[in-house]
Image (tube, rainbow, N blue to C red; front, side, top):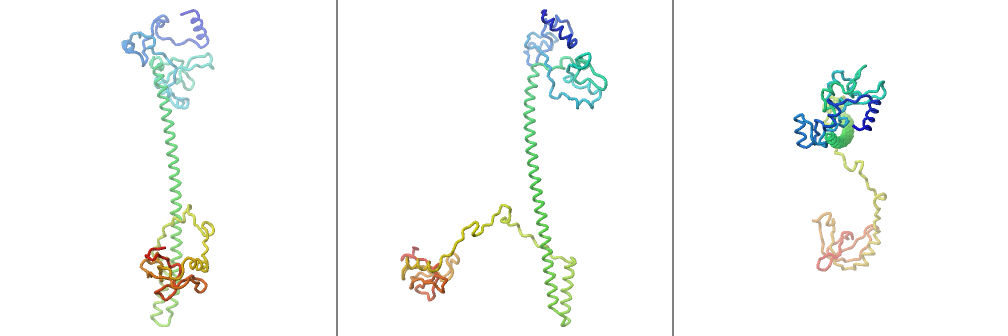
Length: 348
């Protein structure tokens, strides 16, 4: 060891106290890479370590890294444990922590402490377990990669839980809405039944009054009807509850009722005089037409149909309807029931 290294070690010992040293002299340690192989060591060094011999390559040596394990217990986890339970914790938890507040300063075990006592490091479990207390560099890399994976998995699980909670909330809201709707329909059903009973009772009482008391037969009928009305009013008998009509989708909250003048343009009927003038300007007397004295074909496809000609000009009947007379029919026919056609019977 050089003079500068010895001075640095002396200062560290003076500041922090003596460091725990491996079994053997400093010269032996300096000459050897140790007897513990890293998890990523070569096969030769792993075989030497299994045989209890010093390893050969420096890069294969298990270098201790003070890396707390992912499941390292915190104060809240340890405070409820007994002294025996703390000492029995796995070796990886028995790592050193420097106490810079106490007098004198010392290296203490992370977990070996209790009410009124504390263990300096290395504690009993650390001395017993030896190299398994610390995580090697290779294992530290593996642990770091595993931590990244576990954190990503935890984040995904949290997202899944959040999504599931949101879906459950939406489902509960929908169930609440449906329950409220069912209660509303049941109330409507009850109200409808009560209104129906009132109407039946009123009708029975009126019927009983109509029978009168003029003879024995009418009095018996009136009494029977009155008894039925009395039983119905007391609930002794009750007709089957009327079914509630299915909810009209047009009554839903998204429904919109269209009204003339607001949503749809109002259509003003053409005055019959204008209709007559336009017909006479386009179709002279004698124009071939197809006439329907009764209903139009879209209303009654089997209705009377005349293949004929007009025998008069169009005119206004009684001041309100545009009509025309045709050959083969004695009465006038509405212009809305008359269709001009070609001589070949095709429509114009």
